[in-house]
Length: 405
Image 1 (cartoon, helix red, strand yellow):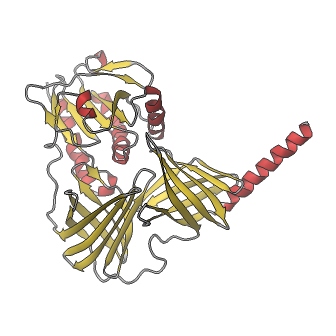
Image 2 (cartoon, rainbow, N blue to C red; image 1 turned 180 degrees about the horizontal axis):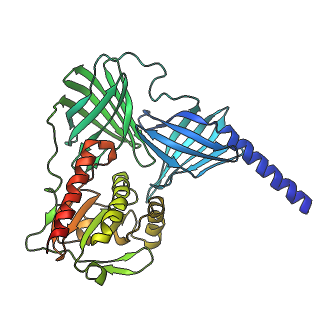
Image 3 (cartoon, rainbow, N blue to C red; image 1 turned 45 degrees about the vertical axis):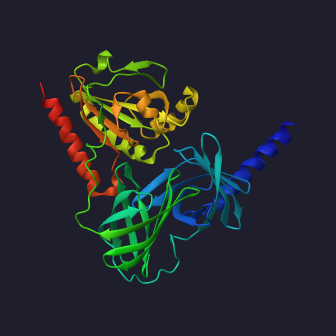
């Protein structure tokens, strides 16, 4: 019996090693298919030894590391580190075919998935010459009513950039300008975006289509405008009349109750980060906030993450938040509010808030315990100068509050 078990174990190890080796190192072209049949393309890089592979999903300058990759027999299982999604695929020759599965609170959503090794193109193997250069800032208007600022950077035919909105940005977009058409996409395990448009002339984009997730679809146009900008992010959310302070008691991941009246917050600047593990913009803000905390904590600043998950169940919410905490080594407490991210829920949790608009929302509280500023949304590193401007403004605000007696 021991001999048989040893042979079985040897065969399993051998098969797994063989399967891992079929995940060819290098750049792969991949896509997920929406309900409309549109393919949202992206690329990823495979690295590692035959016995252990890792991938990095590529969007512009971001290489999003995904260490949990298992190849068993003819199957490959890739678990995304955030956003509760995964790939389940099988080899077809050297290629992969299968599904990207998003685990939502009430159902799983399955996208067809395909990937081909040794291919570093995103949209077209051979890109047509660009008829225009769309580099610069644009006013983009969506049929749904959203007004955004688009920031594009074009080098040859390659195009990168993002769309900024009052509730956050569309993170790192990458694509191409082929002839008189614009193509951009993003995939990070939470987002799956595809933007296309026709270039009418050097100042006008028309016939824009936007595909989001499995079934989301919108239309958009854009006019070039070097002075395009969004409303002040500090002007969109406020306290209701008569309120100066925020009060709550929520539970941290260890089960301990935390309130702003606790001793550790007295005479401190406190930053409240209203966030969720499902939110890619919150991921970007968390990455920044970890560095901010390390820089400012010793000077008298505390940070609290207030999590609004897709479930009111504490255990399920904790399971969703722990990967975020571990990935970014979050040193400050994350509290499970017990409220979800559904419309109206954040206002129920903090009834003194008026006009709550988006995740993340950041609340800045001074040493007297009074709310001084509320920032809606987050312009992450994919927005370039806007990200730098946010950091400068946010840190100057904290410097000024620390200087107050």
